Amino acid sequence: MEEQMEQRKEAAFENAKEQISDAADRLKAKSREAWEYAKEKSHEKWEDARAQGEQFWDDTQRIVQKHPGRALAISFLAGAVIGALLFSREND
Image (cartoon, rainbow, N blue to C red; front, side, top):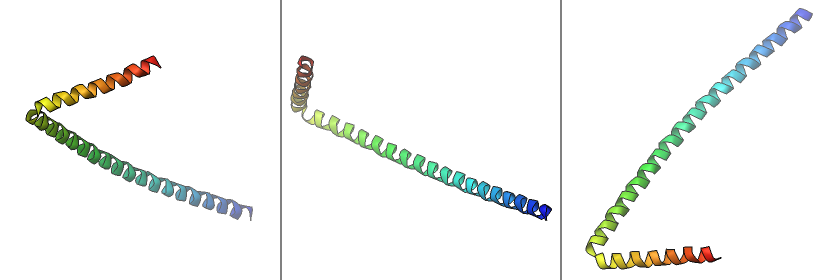
């Protein structure tokens, strides 16, 4: 009788061990899938951002070449505003 109880305990333990191992394997596989998905999406977003940055740079160059006086005036004005903001913060 005691031997049967011991065998049942061992069988239950082995069964639990297998279930935990299977669950861990499934979790590991899901984690890998999630990681690969995140890696792929981040790469796509990086490429999109890079392409948009290049497009912005090209557009900016085209506008500056077309309207150099305006570009100079805008950059001077932007510098003056940023300088005023920085100077006012130093005085606070």
